[in-house]
Length: 115
Length: 117
Image (cartoon, rainbow over all chains, first blue to last red; front, top):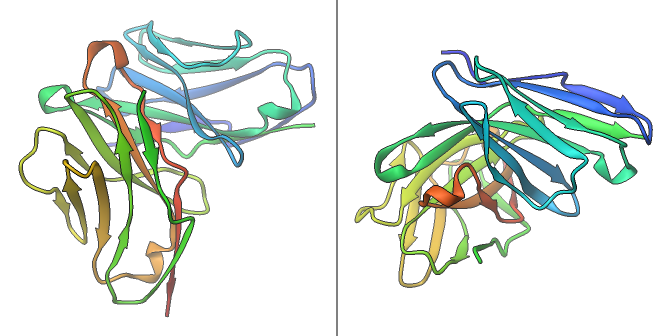
């Protein structure tokens, strides 16, 4: 089974621009979560999508948005980029197990640098 | 609120020896899951092992075992017979088992493990 794919792997943008990151989950998984990882704040949850619906959202400004398509692929968008948005953005494909326990399998991440 | 604490920023272990990475958690939820992930320098988060709060036995997965002590709210990761490829950052994480908390993992700050030859 193919793993989680994220594109692009690396990205350099300038302040004020907008960026779109893509994530394809493991085949058969219908739920995707996004995380931001920075040296200062660590790993923080952005949002989660299931069957094209956002079910959960972290504490990020409205500049961060996402969506999910009918084939479960997901995109996240960051508008009006700020220097502090430089981070590793990780997407996770979610498998639901026994007693409601969800196991998340991560992709390789997209490294975004904002200049 | 949920919180994960990893008190060891960095650790060294000799190749072929066992090592324990500490993780304590705080939650008022009756049901939750605890997870460990490995992150090599490449950045990808690799799932290692999980434990449900309802599980009576400690989880094991190959050379990884999770020492779950519910009363102490600890979920330490034990790696047996360390290998050079085990050098990486290790994260402990937690999730609630409720419909209102879908897809959200709370992570600790991580522990950097270096395996010496």
